[in-house]
Image 1 (tube, rainbow, N blue to C red):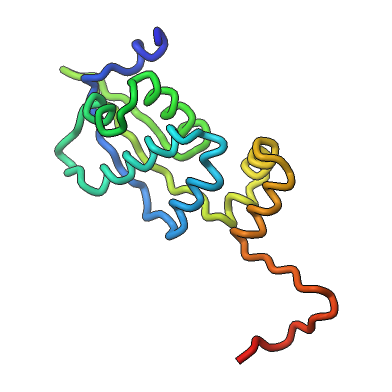
Image 2: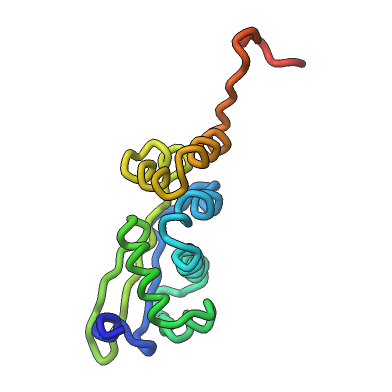
Length: 159
C-alpha cells in the first residue's frame, strides 16, 4: 500500500486512449490467454478501461475512485492489476502533475490468438502457468488445428 500511495490516489484523474482498433478475437484472447497470466482482476481493469475509452471525451477525465466503484475494487487491487497490464504490454501509463494529478492510460492492442501463441515469451509463460497438456489443447482449439488421421485424404471438402 505504501508504494501505491506514492503513485496513485483515489482522487487522481485518468484519461484513457486506445492506440489502435483491437482484433475481433480480443475478448477471447484476453480471457483464455492473458487471464491466467494477469488474473481476472487484470482483465477486468483492462476491459473497463477499454469500454471507458469509447465514451470518454478528449477534454474530460474520470477519477480513479469512479473506476474503483465501477469495478467494485480497491485502489490497491486496481494498482496491482495496472502493474500487471503494464508488465505484459497491454497498457502504458503516463503521469502529469498539476493542480491535480492526471494519469494517461494508453491501451495497447492485445495480440491475436495466433500472435500470442507464436510469441516465444508469452507462449512459454502461459504453458508454464497452465501446464503442457492444457496449453496444447488451448492452442489446438484457438488455432483450429485439425489433425486428420493419416488414412484420410486431404483433397476436397464435402459439398
